Image (cartoon, rainbow, N blue to C red; front, side, top):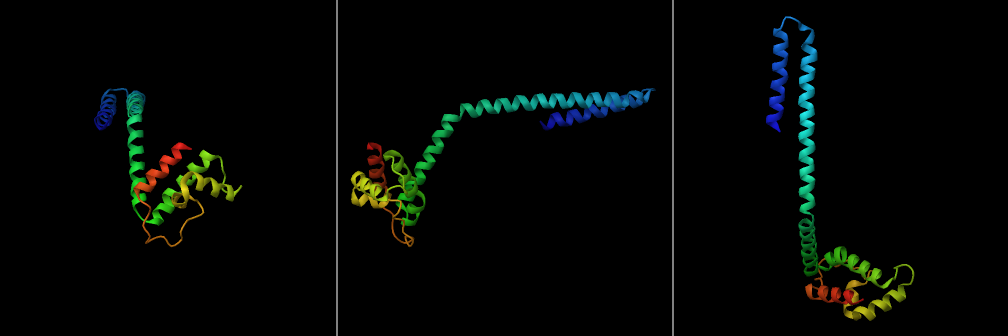
Length: 161
C-alpha cells in the first residue's frame, strides 16, 4: 500500500511537470486532477478488495476463533473455581445461578423459598451453598473456593436438569 501511495504521488508530479513544460498551461489543472482521480479510484479498489479478503478470512477462522474463546472462558472458570471464595462469588456464582434459574424456570424475586427448595433438591445442601445467589460472602477474600471438583459436580447436575 505504501508503494502505491508513493507511485501515485510520483504520477501526479510527473503529469504536472509534463503539463508545465508544454506551451499551453490551461491543461495543468485538468491533467493533474485526472491523475489524482485515477490514483484515488485505484486506491479505493485496492482497499475494497483487501477488506473483502479479510472478511472471507475472518469467516473462515470463525469456528476456530469461537473454539479458542470457549477454551479461554473454560480455563478462566477453572482458575476461578480453584481460587478464593471472593472470585467464586464474583465470577462463577452469578453464572451458575443464572443457568440454574433458566433451567428450572424460577426467578429470584418471585418465590425465594421455592428457589431454595428446588436448589437443595437438585444440588443437595453442600453444593447448593455454592450456587445459591443469596449466599454471597462479603468477607470471603481469604476463604478458599470449592475447587474444580465441586464445579464439575455442579455442572453435571445442571446438565441433568
